Image 1 (cartoon, rainbow, N blue to C red):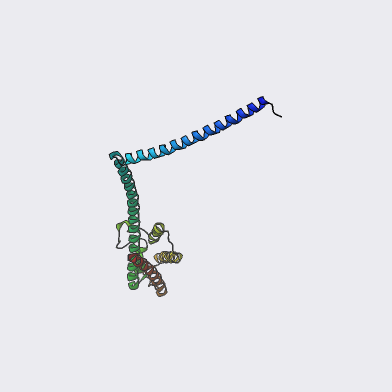
Image 2 (spheres, rainbow, N blue to C red):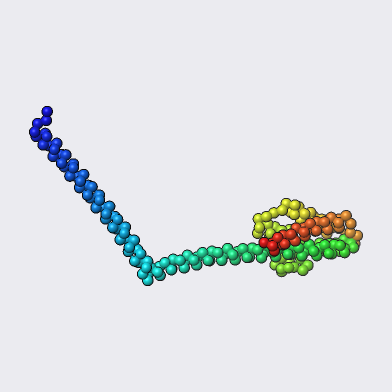
Length: 208
């Protein structure tokens, strides 16, 4: 059984704990109220600043600067695409022009010498679309298009290689000899296939 002194101590401890809990609840409520007031005060002040001349200037500066940066990025991409597309189109027309010239001259070649001249556009344009590509090999023009587009047709690559190989053989032959009709026919077939490929690409580009 507890004596009177022990009871008094326990009762005092209970009262102390009760007072501490009461004070903590009161302090917590005050902190929450202060936080609400502070948050409300902050947004009130922020809106007051944003609605002021300084705030309007600040917002306009942010939007104008961001808009200008976005415009510059868009313009840069557009300019780069324009340059790329122009280079692709120039290469395509240069190739088509050379193939046309080769076919025209090959059909009229009477001897190897004339056939050798007819195949000159493989390495040099007789009438360039752009002076930049006048002395550029036709295989390099195809490779440049591949670099610009990332698209490569294996069959077309094989035809270009065959055209170059036949050209090397013809260039090594006696210019006075007559043209072999089978060789002429194969050269025309290669040129027609390459020319058709270029025309289809140009037409697709014009429709897009």
